[in-house]
Image (cartoon, rainbow, N blue to C red; front, top):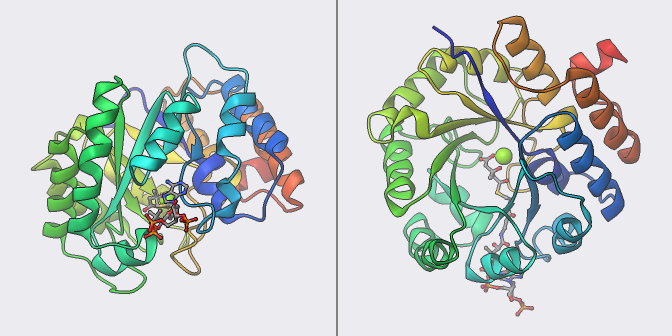
Length: 295
Ligand code: HMG
Ligand code: MG
């Protein structure tokens, strides 16, 4: 049985825009405010990573300073290390996320250290976040395949997920970073992780490179997972995963969920407007089929 409600964690302003050509801070502010107006309650708004590595996110503090906030919306930021966390706290992030990988090569390319080193690096981040009462989300990349190593063992996905969960992450987001998964593999992966992390602490973060994300989500919803990451207008990709396209478009996800009778609290028309505005700012067509059909 599918859940009655799904919580959508919107990553377009971060995962999306980190891999698009740069837009202005004001474009980001308009996007984030449009997402909140559409009823989205969890918005990843910023990323405090090295601006040399990801210049698109260099204005993250300005973005957080300039949005008008809704009291019931959580604005979160990516923080790879203590420096990132300090910047995120100064900028007023409501919550932060650490990000590891189930693939050794991807960890090296993405955060310039091994999986074990990344876990060591996350310990002080976790401690300071706890001391400040800021919730920490944990991402695991390459859960259904790696651009450098190919297939990744389920035991490795489960091991890294469990490490981040035991370290104190309130939720583990399982990233099909390059969108290579298919429904049965995706469900098996979630089931393997659910043996070590409670299902209600898991989120799905599927990129749509091969057009499988909706099908994969549908298969995984049967396991009881009810948090899904998606990116308005299908923005983005991953700078360290060549050829990867953006996350599943939020509009397409909302359309499917509402069709299944699953509540999201989101107004699809307002969401489409927010996605179309940022697509215009980027000078490209929306990556959402639903947005194109409704526009
Ligand atoms: P490094 O070069 O090993 O780090 O990078 P370092 O500690 O040696 O620092 C090098 C320089 O960066 C220094 O500056 C630091 O001050 C600075 P310099 O002395 O050369 O002028 N620095 C920072 N500046 C701002 N904010 C910081 C920060 N940290 C160091 N937080 C590092 C290591 C982790 C910093 C780097 O590799 C990095 O920033 N990586 C981020 C890569 C990234 O953002 N990837 C995309 C996000 S992950 C993703 O998209 C996947 C996900 O969506 C899930 C999925 O789909 O699977 C989450
Ligand atoms: Mg991603």
